Length: 467
Ligand SMILES: Cc1ncc(COP(=O)(O)O)c(C=O)c1O
Image 1 (cartoon, rainbow, N blue to C red):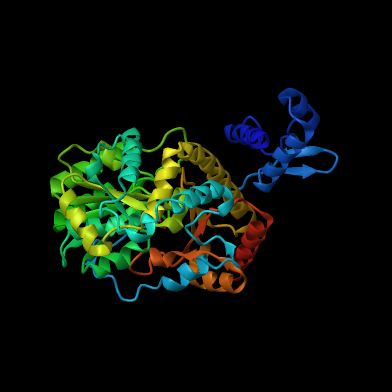
Image 2 (tube, helix red, strand yellow):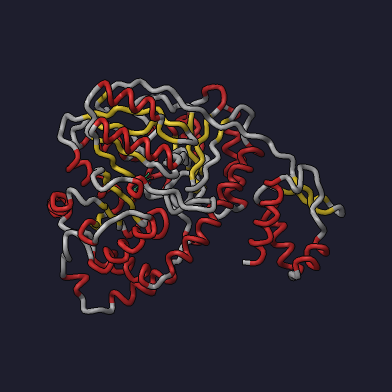
């Protein structure tokens, strides 16, 4: 949209320093003439910049760049290199329920707002699939997945540099099911698996249920897994596998450089552990290029289980993901059969239809732009509303902010109070086996910025101060 383009251009100029804090922006009239835009479009762009907290209107004087509060980023937290059983129960049910509660201000969940998803198109495709021969109701479909969907996924993988024949791709019920199948093949009960610290919280109970020990690896909130720590851990004990989210990690948004990904592959080769790559956020980059998946850098003899899904980009409710691995494809197909037989055909056909329509890349471009703006707006809102000493990540993709509260305040206490007052967030302690992230919270930016979100952040700021 024209107003978004103008807003993004001005935002980029502010980021580059062409406009500094306190500078006056060109007048509405000047922008109208110079850009050849309608007055309404220019005003909408300025309102958007104001909503993102980048500029402020001063009566009869125009729009000025707001002074920016510089937010500090959190650092790597030290983690003991012990292999441990994940204790039971790992408290997550309440947090998951709160993030799905529509009456709460949505800063807690890992899903995107309907407004930034192509729901009309998906609904139309759904109707077309239902109008077919009825086999979506009566058939199980092949355990490895619908052949058209696998073909479409295969075509996308080629563009990412992930070499995979159609037979190497198994359709799963979300990335979660893909990781569980990979764990079933890569490990046996009693083995040790390395995970990032902090980690995506559902990975911990999954490993516990598989009878595995977990060793958490120190992870930098911007650059990802600390490879020296991982090397030390791997030299102390046999590791069966490492589960990593190398691009736009949840909760930190960290991304490993291509060089670090290569070093990680070397480490896995040297110490003979499997790599389970979770790439659900890889398409959500804000920069010029998509980060390379580990799987695209692997040699043919490396054993990477590449797991991804359409949950974070298109339709979490369809529960469709995929797993790519050449070496173990027969065992993985058997594991899929013995876990869920197959994934729902209706859901797979809707996605296959969407991918075949060519609309996915267009949608991803718009989605990335929306998420970049939402993350920027939330960051600015933190700068306006949260007390000093707060530390915040500056992710290059995805839609999470990982926030360290000042003065060792409790993320759980903030969460409890926030839910009482109508705001959903995720307390950080669920992202580790022990309480090491007790003073963190994770904020989700899956919704377009709004007054309700701004009010929610203002309330959160007050709750944190009052702690
Ligand atoms: C890092 C990460 N991996 C996997 C998942 C789950 O993906 P899916 O919904 O495809 O099972 C999530 C969901 O929040 C996630 O954040």
